[in-house]
Image (cartoon, rainbow, N blue to C red):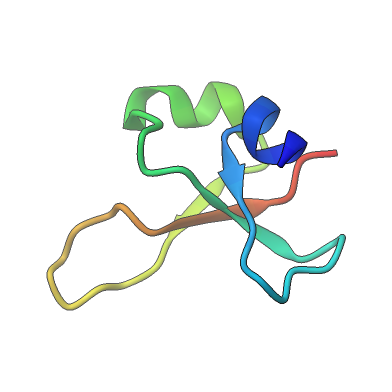
Length: 59
């Protein structure tokens, strides 16, 4: 919960340290480069929306 609160990421139920994290959908596109310098990738969705985004888990 601390990771989600401080770093604006979420982790799935089976998450292990070192796995990728999901960027919270409330993070605006223009802040992604600042908050996640390692980069963010979008998961392809049938709707074409980019709200499911993954990044390397911040330490």
